[in-house]
Image (cartoon, rainbow, N blue to C red; front, top):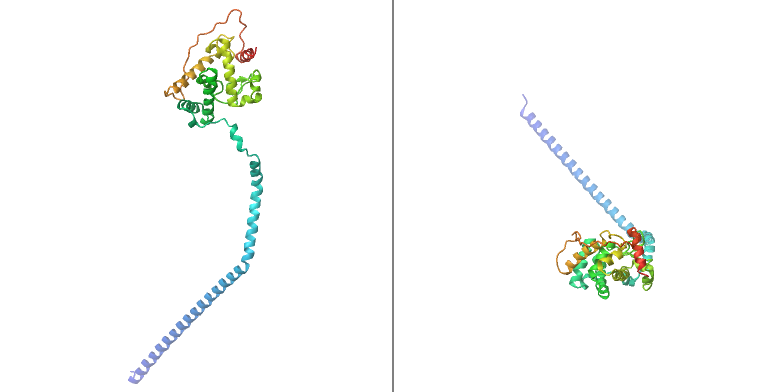
Length: 300
Protein backbone atom coordinates (compact mmCIF):
# COMPACT_ATOMS: atom_id res chain seq x y z
CA UNK A 1 0.00 0.00 0.00
CA UNK A 2 1.32 3.39 -1.07
CA UNK A 3 1.97 5.96 1.58
CA UNK A 4 0.25 9.36 1.58
CA UNK A 5 3.54 11.01 0.71
CA UNK A 6 4.01 8.85 -2.38
CA UNK A 7 0.44 9.54 -3.53
CA UNK A 8 0.88 13.25 -3.18
CA UNK A 9 4.05 13.07 -5.21
CA UNK A 10 2.25 11.27 -8.03
CA UNK A 11 -0.61 13.77 -8.09
CA UNK A 12 1.84 16.64 -8.16
CA UNK A 13 3.72 15.03 -11.07
CA UNK A 14 0.52 14.47 -13.03
CA UNK A 15 -0.49 18.07 -12.48
CA UNK A 16 2.86 19.33 -13.78
CA UNK A 17 2.56 17.05 -16.79
CA UNK A 18 -0.87 18.50 -17.65
CA UNK A 19 0.40 22.06 -17.29
CA UNK A 20 3.36 21.24 -19.52
CA UNK A 21 1.10 19.71 -22.14
CA UNK A 22 -1.28 22.69 -22.01
CA UNK A 23 1.61 25.11 -22.28
CA UNK A 24 3.05 23.19 -25.23
CA UNK A 25 -0.31 23.22 -27.07
CA UNK A 26 -0.70 26.93 -26.38
CA UNK A 27 2.77 27.64 -27.70
CA UNK A 28 2.04 25.56 -30.79
CA UNK A 29 -1.21 27.32 -31.48
CA UNK A 30 0.38 30.74 -30.99
CA UNK A 31 3.17 29.83 -33.35
CA UNK A 32 0.73 28.56 -35.95
CA UNK A 33 -1.36 31.72 -35.59
CA UNK A 34 1.68 33.94 -35.94
CA UNK A 35 2.78 31.91 -38.95
CA UNK A 36 -0.58 32.25 -40.67
CA UNK A 37 -0.65 35.95 -39.93
CA UNK A 38 2.80 36.37 -41.39
CA UNK A 39 1.85 34.36 -44.48
CA UNK A 40 -1.29 36.44 -44.92
CA UNK A 41 0.63 39.66 -44.58
CA UNK A 42 3.22 38.45 -47.04
CA UNK A 43 0.54 37.28 -49.51
CA UNK A 44 -1.31 40.58 -49.35
CA UNK A 45 1.94 42.41 -49.73
CA UNK A 46 2.78 40.29 -52.76
CA UNK A 47 -0.62 40.92 -54.32
CA UNK A 48 -0.24 44.60 -53.65
CA UNK A 49 3.14 44.59 -55.32
CA UNK A 50 1.68 42.77 -58.34
CA UNK A 51 -1.16 45.27 -58.64
CA UNK A 52 1.16 48.21 -58.29
CA UNK A 53 3.50 46.72 -60.87
CA UNK A 54 0.62 46.10 -63.26
CA UNK A 55 -0.65 49.64 -62.83
CA UNK A 56 2.80 51.00 -63.32
CA UNK A 57 3.28 48.88 -66.44
CA UNK A 58 -0.09 49.95 -67.85
CA UNK A 59 0.56 53.59 -67.09
CA UNK A 60 4.00 53.46 -68.63
CA UNK A 61 2.68 51.73 -71.75
CA UNK A 62 -0.72 53.49 -72.13
CA UNK A 63 0.55 55.60 -75.00
CA UNK A 64 1.88 52.54 -76.80
CA UNK A 65 -1.39 50.65 -76.28
CA UNK A 66 -3.45 53.60 -77.49
CA UNK A 67 -1.26 53.92 -80.54
CA UNK A 68 -1.59 50.21 -81.32
CA UNK A 69 -5.37 50.33 -80.93
CA UNK A 70 -5.56 53.40 -83.17
CA UNK A 71 -3.49 51.71 -85.86
CA UNK A 72 -5.66 48.58 -85.78
CA UNK A 73 -8.87 50.62 -85.93
CA UNK A 74 -7.52 52.71 -88.81
CA UNK A 75 -6.58 49.57 -90.72
CA UNK A 76 -10.02 48.05 -90.24
CA UNK A 77 -11.72 51.26 -91.31
CA UNK A 78 -9.55 51.56 -94.40
CA UNK A 79 -10.43 48.01 -95.44
CA UNK A 80 -14.13 48.73 -94.93
CA UNK A 81 -13.92 51.99 -96.85
CA UNK A 82 -12.05 50.31 -99.69
CA UNK A 83 -15.06 48.03 -100.15
CA UNK A 84 -17.80 50.67 -99.76
CA UNK A 85 -16.38 53.89 -101.18
CA UNK A 86 -16.31 52.89 -104.88
CA UNK A 87 -19.99 51.90 -104.74
CA UNK A 88 -20.96 55.01 -102.78
CA UNK A 89 -18.99 57.21 -105.13
CA UNK A 90 -20.74 55.61 -108.09
CA UNK A 91 -24.09 56.31 -106.47
CA UNK A 92 -23.16 59.91 -105.83
CA UNK A 93 -21.93 60.37 -109.38
CA UNK A 94 -25.11 58.80 -110.84
CA UNK A 95 -27.49 60.77 -108.63
CA UNK A 96 -30.21 62.59 -110.56
CA UNK A 97 -32.37 64.84 -108.38
CA UNK A 98 -34.50 65.57 -111.44
CA UNK A 99 -35.19 61.89 -112.18
CA UNK A 100 -38.56 62.19 -110.50
CA UNK A 101 -39.70 64.28 -113.45
CA UNK A 102 -39.49 61.12 -115.60
CA UNK A 103 -41.56 59.06 -113.18
CA UNK A 104 -45.07 58.22 -114.32
CA UNK A 105 -46.77 58.64 -110.98
CA UNK A 106 -49.27 60.80 -109.16
CA UNK A 107 -50.54 61.02 -105.63
CA UNK A 108 -53.99 59.38 -105.46
CA UNK A 109 -55.01 62.21 -103.13
CA UNK A 110 -54.70 64.63 -106.05
CA UNK A 111 -57.41 62.80 -108.02
CA UNK A 112 -61.12 63.44 -107.92
CA UNK A 113 -63.15 60.99 -105.87
CA UNK A 114 -64.27 59.16 -109.02
CA UNK A 115 -60.76 58.97 -110.45
CA UNK A 116 -59.32 57.83 -107.11
CA UNK A 117 -61.92 55.06 -106.86
CA UNK A 118 -61.11 53.86 -110.37
CA UNK A 119 -57.35 53.99 -109.72
CA UNK A 120 -57.68 52.05 -106.47
CA UNK A 121 -59.83 49.37 -108.12
CA UNK A 122 -57.41 48.96 -111.05
CA UNK A 123 -54.46 48.81 -108.64
CA UNK A 124 -56.05 45.96 -106.70
CA UNK A 125 -57.40 44.11 -109.73
CA UNK A 126 -54.16 44.12 -111.72
CA UNK A 127 -51.74 44.22 -108.76
CA UNK A 128 -49.98 47.38 -109.84
CA UNK A 129 -48.89 50.34 -107.72
CA UNK A 130 -51.59 52.99 -107.19
CA UNK A 131 -49.28 55.94 -107.98
CA UNK A 132 -48.53 55.12 -111.65
CA UNK A 133 -52.12 53.98 -112.15
CA UNK A 134 -53.32 57.29 -110.74
CA UNK A 135 -51.24 59.12 -113.33
CA UNK A 136 -52.72 57.01 -116.12
CA UNK A 137 -56.23 57.58 -114.83
CA UNK A 138 -55.61 61.33 -114.82
CA UNK A 139 -54.29 61.17 -118.37
CA UNK A 140 -57.21 59.04 -119.55
CA UNK A 141 -59.62 61.66 -118.26
CA UNK A 142 -57.75 64.52 -119.95
CA UNK A 143 -57.09 62.79 -123.29
CA UNK A 144 -60.54 61.19 -123.31
CA UNK A 145 -62.17 64.60 -123.01
CA UNK A 146 -60.02 65.97 -125.83
CA UNK A 147 -60.78 62.99 -128.10
CA UNK A 148 -64.43 62.72 -127.18
CA UNK A 149 -63.96 59.22 -125.76
CA UNK A 150 -65.06 57.84 -122.42
CA UNK A 151 -61.94 57.58 -120.19
CA UNK A 152 -63.22 54.25 -118.89
CA UNK A 153 -63.02 52.90 -122.47
CA UNK A 154 -59.37 53.95 -122.71
CA UNK A 155 -58.57 52.29 -119.38
CA UNK A 156 -60.50 49.16 -120.35
CA UNK A 157 -58.44 48.81 -123.54
CA UNK A 158 -55.22 49.11 -121.54
CA UNK A 159 -56.52 46.46 -119.16
CA UNK A 160 -57.35 43.97 -121.91
CA UNK A 161 -54.35 44.74 -124.11
CA UNK A 162 -51.52 44.75 -121.56
CA UNK A 163 -52.91 44.39 -118.02
CA UNK A 164 -51.23 47.75 -117.42
CA UNK A 165 -47.77 46.47 -118.31
CA UNK A 166 -46.03 49.39 -120.10
CA UNK A 167 -43.37 47.04 -121.52
CA UNK A 168 -45.72 44.48 -123.06
CA UNK A 169 -45.08 43.40 -126.67
CA UNK A 170 -47.03 41.11 -128.99
CA UNK A 171 -45.47 38.66 -131.47
CA UNK A 172 -46.15 41.08 -134.35
CA UNK A 173 -44.65 44.13 -132.64
CA UNK A 174 -47.58 45.81 -130.90
CA UNK A 175 -46.03 47.53 -127.89
CA UNK A 176 -46.80 49.25 -124.65
CA UNK A 177 -49.93 49.79 -122.62
CA UNK A 178 -52.31 50.03 -125.57
CA UNK A 179 -50.37 47.66 -127.85
CA UNK A 180 -49.91 50.09 -130.72
CA UNK A 181 -47.95 48.89 -133.75
CA UNK A 182 -44.94 51.11 -133.14
CA UNK A 183 -43.27 50.69 -136.53
CA UNK A 184 -46.57 51.31 -138.32
CA UNK A 185 -47.29 54.48 -136.36
CA UNK A 186 -43.75 55.77 -136.07
CA UNK A 187 -44.91 59.13 -137.45
CA UNK A 188 -47.15 59.54 -134.41
CA UNK A 189 -44.19 58.93 -132.13
CA UNK A 190 -41.94 61.45 -133.89
CA UNK A 191 -43.53 64.33 -132.02
CA UNK A 192 -42.59 62.54 -128.78
CA UNK A 193 -38.97 61.98 -129.75
CA UNK A 194 -39.07 58.65 -131.60
CA UNK A 195 -40.24 55.07 -131.38
CA UNK A 196 -38.73 54.43 -127.97
CA UNK A 197 -41.43 56.72 -126.59
CA UNK A 198 -43.77 53.76 -127.10
CA UNK A 199 -42.54 52.52 -123.73
CA UNK A 200 -43.38 55.77 -122.00
CA UNK A 201 -46.80 54.98 -120.51
CA UNK A 202 -48.30 58.43 -121.02
CA UNK A 203 -47.04 58.71 -124.60
CA UNK A 204 -48.30 55.23 -125.47
CA UNK A 205 -51.68 56.14 -124.04
CA UNK A 206 -51.88 59.31 -126.15
CA UNK A 207 -50.85 57.58 -129.37
CA UNK A 208 -53.14 54.64 -128.62
CA UNK A 209 -56.11 56.97 -128.18
CA UNK A 210 -55.30 58.61 -131.51
CA UNK A 211 -55.22 55.22 -133.24
CA UNK A 212 -58.45 54.17 -131.51
CA UNK A 213 -60.15 57.40 -132.58
CA UNK A 214 -59.13 56.75 -136.19
CA UNK A 215 -60.38 53.14 -135.98
CA UNK A 216 -63.79 54.23 -134.70
CA UNK A 217 -64.06 56.91 -137.39
CA UNK A 218 -63.12 54.39 -140.07
CA UNK A 219 -65.58 51.75 -138.86
CA UNK A 220 -68.40 54.13 -138.04
CA UNK A 221 -69.15 52.62 -134.63
CA UNK A 222 -67.47 51.83 -131.34
CA UNK A 223 -67.81 48.07 -131.74
CA UNK A 224 -66.52 48.24 -135.31
CA UNK A 225 -63.69 50.48 -134.21
CA UNK A 226 -62.62 47.93 -131.63
CA UNK A 227 -62.57 45.26 -134.35
CA UNK A 228 -60.33 47.49 -136.43
CA UNK A 229 -58.16 48.21 -133.40
CA UNK A 230 -57.56 44.52 -132.72
CA UNK A 231 -57.13 43.76 -136.43
CA UNK A 232 -60.30 41.74 -136.94
CA UNK A 233 -62.22 43.98 -139.37
CA UNK A 234 -61.96 41.36 -142.15
CA UNK A 235 -62.73 38.42 -139.88
CA UNK A 236 -66.14 36.93 -139.06
CA UNK A 237 -65.60 37.92 -135.42
CA UNK A 238 -62.93 39.49 -133.23
CA UNK A 239 -62.50 36.52 -130.90
CA UNK A 240 -64.49 38.25 -128.18
CA UNK A 241 -62.15 41.24 -127.98
CA UNK A 242 -64.80 43.96 -128.12
CA UNK A 243 -66.95 42.09 -125.61
CA UNK A 244 -64.00 41.87 -123.19
CA UNK A 245 -63.20 45.56 -123.54
CA UNK A 246 -66.81 46.66 -123.10
CA UNK A 247 -67.25 44.23 -120.20
CA UNK A 248 -64.26 45.73 -118.42
CA UNK A 249 -65.54 49.20 -119.19
CA UNK A 250 -68.84 48.23 -117.60
CA UNK A 251 -67.04 47.53 -114.30
CA UNK A 252 -65.18 50.83 -114.49
CA UNK A 253 -68.40 52.72 -115.16
CA UNK A 254 -69.96 51.09 -112.13
CA UNK A 255 -67.01 52.28 -110.04
CA UNK A 256 -67.46 55.82 -111.39
CA UNK A 257 -71.12 55.67 -110.38
CA UNK A 258 -70.05 54.87 -106.84
CA UNK A 259 -71.05 51.21 -106.87
CA UNK A 260 -68.97 48.48 -105.24
CA UNK A 261 -67.35 46.05 -107.64
CA UNK A 262 -65.08 43.23 -106.48
CA UNK A 263 -61.54 43.41 -107.94
CA UNK A 264 -61.92 39.71 -108.75
CA UNK A 265 -65.23 40.15 -110.55
CA UNK A 266 -65.52 38.35 -113.87
CA UNK A 267 -65.80 40.73 -116.78
CA UNK A 268 -69.39 41.41 -117.75
CA UNK A 269 -70.57 39.76 -120.94
CA UNK A 270 -71.51 42.23 -123.64
CA UNK A 271 -73.23 40.68 -126.63
CA UNK A 272 -72.16 42.25 -129.93
CA UNK A 273 -74.00 41.31 -133.11
CA UNK A 274 -71.67 39.42 -135.48
CA UNK A 275 -70.58 41.17 -138.64
CA UNK A 276 -70.94 39.09 -141.76
CA UNK A 277 -68.31 40.02 -144.34
CA UNK A 278 -69.51 40.74 -147.87
CA UNK A 279 -68.84 38.32 -150.70
CA UNK A 280 -66.11 40.59 -152.05
CA UNK A 281 -64.31 40.77 -148.73
CA UNK A 282 -60.79 39.38 -148.76
CA UNK A 283 -60.11 36.02 -147.21
CA UNK A 284 -59.71 36.04 -143.46
CA UNK A 285 -56.22 36.35 -142.05
CA UNK A 286 -54.80 35.38 -138.68
CA UNK A 287 -55.68 37.99 -136.07
CA UNK A 288 -52.06 39.03 -135.44
CA UNK A 289 -51.38 39.66 -139.13
CA UNK A 290 -54.75 41.33 -139.57
CA UNK A 291 -53.99 43.74 -136.73
CA UNK A 292 -50.88 44.94 -138.51
CA UNK A 293 -52.77 45.30 -141.79
CA UNK A 294 -55.60 47.24 -140.20
CA UNK A 295 -53.28 49.65 -138.45
CA UNK A 296 -51.31 50.09 -141.68
CA UNK A 297 -54.58 50.89 -143.47
CA UNK A 298 -55.13 53.79 -141.09
CA UNK A 299 -52.14 55.52 -142.63
CA UNK A 300 -53.64 55.54 -146.11
